[in-house]
Image (cartoon, rainbow, N blue to C red):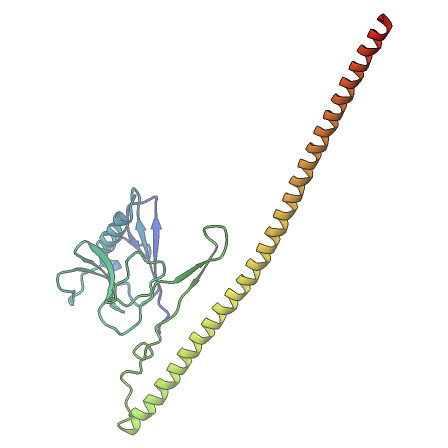
Amino acid sequence: GCDQFINFRFDATSSETTLNGTNNPAVADTINHQNMTYSIGIQGVTSLDELTEVMYLGIKSLRSVPSNAIQDADVVSIDTHHGLNISKIGDDIVFTKDDDWLSLIVYDHLIGDNPDFRESRPLTIHTGPKANQALKLNFNDMRSSAMLLDTVTVTNRDNANAAIGACDAAIEYALNEVTRSGAYRARLEFTEENLVTANENTQASESTIRDADMAKEMTEYTRSNVLAQASQSMLAQANQNASSVLSLLQ
């Protein structure tokens, strides 16, 4: 609703974590309700486990632990305004939220699928021969709770008026998702057409190469035949000369 983004930037040249350019915990702990960028120093990190551990410890060095922490878990606040945390539960490091107030979408996240945490993994469709040729499709939560319709009531006039506004917002939300889905479909259809064309061009190129290989082989075959016939002619001529010498001797 407030268009806030929380970005994680990984710096392989540093081992220090900063938030919006500061490494002062007293200052970092006051940064909320704005676009935030955590710069995570990952110098020396060689595995995914080390990466998540460094990420957790780096944020922990800057932010406080929420008072409503999950039981049996070490919870560190990423953003207190929306209740977004990074939590260490046993050996697992995951993203958690204090409530279901807002759907959480984490792009290209590191953690596994867990139904207890509201997050979505983009659907990645590989569309070309190179590793980075892919479409990433993200679909928002379409449940009534995500559209804030679970609490709508029409028990009185004020509530009914509020319900109309909530329904209008839900319709707009759904239309946005339909538009997004239509755009994804158009991109996929365009990509499909390009792939079909590329496939046809590849087959045509392969056919041309095969024709060239066939022409080369035919040239080699003709050359071999010419050499063989020339050899036969030379041998026949040599035999004929020998016969002529014998005739003269007789």
